[in-house]
Structures are given as structure tokens and as C-alpha cells.
Amino acid sequence: MVLIEKTDVLHPLGLDMADPESVALMEENGKIHIVSMIDNTVKIKGLGVVNPSKEFSQLKDGEETHVGSKILLRLPTRLPELISGMKRRAQTIGSKDAGVLIARHGIGSDDIVLEAGLGSGGLSMHLARVIGPSGHLITVEPREEHASVGLENLQTLSQCMVEFPNHSHIDGRIEDVVEEIKKHAEHVDAILLDLPDHPPAIEAVAPLLKVGARISCYCPVTSQLEKAWIACEEAGLHVEWAGEIIERQWGKASRGGVRPVNGPFGHTAFLLLAQRRK
Ligand SMILES: C[S@@+](CC[C@H](N)C(=O)[O-])C[C@H]1O[C@@H](n2cnc3c(N)ncnc32)[C@H](O)[C@@H]1O
Picture 1 (cartoon, rainbow, N blue to C red):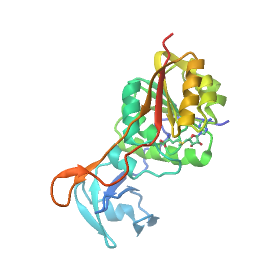
Picture 2: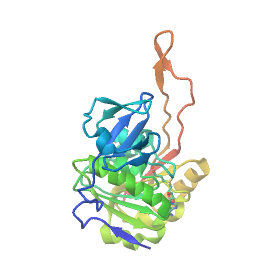
Picture 3: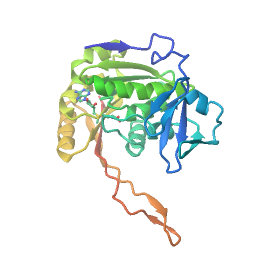
């Protein structure tokens, strides 16, 4: 197990502050590219071969430029743009569920938050945005190829935020690294789990919850939800809420008016929240 401790360096993610900033560039179809402003000719997926510093450094937010046949609009690198243009490997938790999880946990500044698996860092990015500089985000991930993508996304986010929480990343399965986690925090304000197998993790980390703190599980199928429910009860937690958040998008109709768009209801996964009450 490798512990990547990044809180004792100048920047929370070990970022060299001389690293170039990133910009958000939006195509006419809404596709976002997050481009690091390096002064080098590089191949950027979807944009071709460009020197970002030469092409885009004079461009201001709200201004357009041409790259090949594409018209690109520069936008500020706010969280929705960074999420839209983030690198993806493992399936991510989107804003629909991240927002509800953050609200139901009551996560805010100063909190110590434990999250596994890091995956592509989709949920971590939402968490980092709300925890604040005096809070602490602890992420855990056993697969190096996932962690590298998730950490890169967090690093890009940290470059674009004025304030960023302390961040520690631990390599390994969460149930195997409890002692490593305790080196950072004996107890935590929230635990968020997005794993293929929740029960071993719940059993291992439930004792880390402060009284009143909650654990949440993101469960793509009902069998996982049921197992997580039972594991939480066996760990002495009170299951407070379980269910799904269904999203239905509306759009402008071709003949006027607005109506639900043609497309599926937005089921993603089942969520479960359980609280330590004693
Ligand atoms: C669906 S992905 C998480 C995606 C992440 N929530 C996001 O929004 O980008 C699930 C991750 O859990 C990791 N994982 C699997 N078992 C684990 C365990 N026991 N402890 C920690 N992470 C684990 C996987 O390697 C995978 O990267």
C-alpha cells in the first residue's frame, strides 16, 4: 500500500504552482475542452495539433476563436465546465446525485470527508468545491489507472479554485487501509462509498464516523442496495433514507412551448444514507 500524503507540501495536491492555468473552450454543440495553457505544440483530442499558449492566451472569457473548422468560445473554468470536460475512466457520479448526497450529508466547510473509490474523481470534484480550505478530503482507490485519472482531474480543479481543501489520497481497498486513514483523522464527518461491494467497507469504516455523521452508499443495482442496508444495520447505524433521484429534463418544443425532452428518465443508481446515532 502506498500512501500519497499531499497535505504537507505548498499546494494541497503537490501541484507546482508554476504549472500553466487551464481554460475551458466550448464548441458550438456545447462540448467542453479543458486545455492546459502550455507553450508547446501538442495534440489535443477533438481539437487537433495546437500550441495552447499561442492560440488561446490572448482570448478572454466570452470571446471566440477558430481552430480548424471549429468555433471555440472561452468560458471561465467553473465546476460545471470542469466536470463536463474532465477525463473519464471509471463511471462517474454526476451532479444530480452529488448534489443530493452533499445536501443530505450536510457537507460544508471544515468537514473531514472520506470517499472511496476515487475512480475518475467526479464526486471528489463536487466535494472539493464545498469542503473549503480548512476541511480535509481523504480519497481511497486501489486501481492505479483509475487513481491517476481521478487525481489529474482534482489537480486541474485545484488550479482553477481560489480555495481548495487539504487532500490526502490513499492507495488500496478502503477496508484494508483503515489504519492509514486514522493517521489523517481518527473520526470523520462523512463517508461516501461508490464501490462494487459495500459490506466489507461499511464494516471497516463505520467506527470512524463521528456521532451524528452519516455514511452513504451509491448502488447501481437493488441487490447492492439491500446488502448495504443490512451491513449498515449490522454496523449499528440507523438507515435514514434510501431511494433514487429521478431526473426529467425539459426542452423547447419545435412548435413552441416547453415540454419534457424525448429521452429516458434519468435513473442512475440507488442511494442509501445511514447515520451513527450513538
Ligand atoms: C464507479 S467508480 C467510482 C467513481 C467515482 N465515484 C466518480 O464519481 O468518479 C468505483 C471505484 O471504486 C474502486 N474500488 C473498488 N473496490 C474498492 C475498495 N474496496 N476500496 C476502494 N475503492 C474501490 C474501483 O477501482 C473504482 O475506481
